[in-house]
Image 1: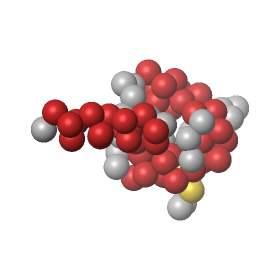
Image 2: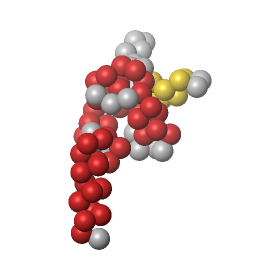
Image 3: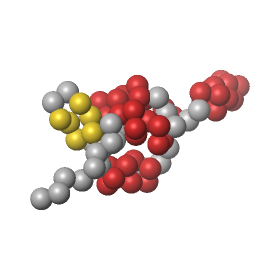
Image 4: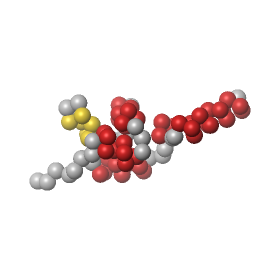
Length: 77
């Protein structure tokens, strides 16, 4: 039986253009599918496809975009 290739946290972060800490945070919160091998997170191609198919969360937005949204929300409040 052939085991599908699995991505590391760093590899997934590079594909998604986010930090490894963001990947870990999204997995810890249960928002992203993943596999655990001991203490390590691993991701199959199916996990990756499910992650990119989900709507973008605020954690995934570039910081400047989040800051702009926060500033606009403060202005209308």
